[in-house]
Image (cartoon, rainbow, N blue to C red; front, side):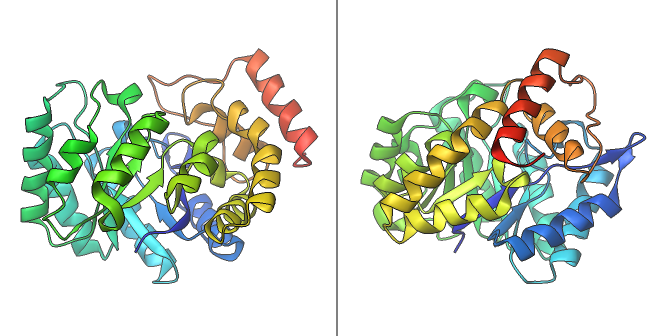
Length: 290
């Protein structure tokens, strides 16, 4: 259902408010560039510092602007199960095609708590759900055995795997087989993950070079390893530079250098250091973007 290059889109800000004009222009650019889906209000979209009203507005705007041309997978995760249910119900009412649900953060639930959290959401909202595991952000690692326990719930359709562990990816695909679509949550290992059976990525880098990410992932999907490796090697310096500091600080700078939006982030995120700004500009220049 959710395949290919899916962008974890930034939420552009202007003078402290959501820049709706810039968001609309970026969405149009993704559609013409081959992006297969858009995730608004994820980590890259600074969901942690959006008000509930802004969160809902961004999802509603994205659905309206996309107008059914590609998939919209709304970020609706929370460390409160009831809040995640409420946000996912809103995403469904707004017309989203699915919801991306990060594992609960800070309260560090055990594996049983993770299972019960997603079970509750799956039973409460009839919408395709994408699990999201990224222990470096949340402090908790959702194990493949726990994911397998959720396979009886038909609306649990995919998982964004961002643990960085190839061994965990192998185990996840082995246990869930074709029942679950696995998506890369780490741009730098998208190609290795796809060689093992992943079907695409929810990507940060796609914000900056949507067409190139789409081409790399499409080549991997058709088992054209030579082309996919060529794209991977070309993209690799960008992968690195976009994580010089906490995401989405660098990617917003990159987009500002391309004239797509401001580099404004919300506290407690802070502007990119001058040293890393210089490094990012150098990589973008060498890539041919500047």
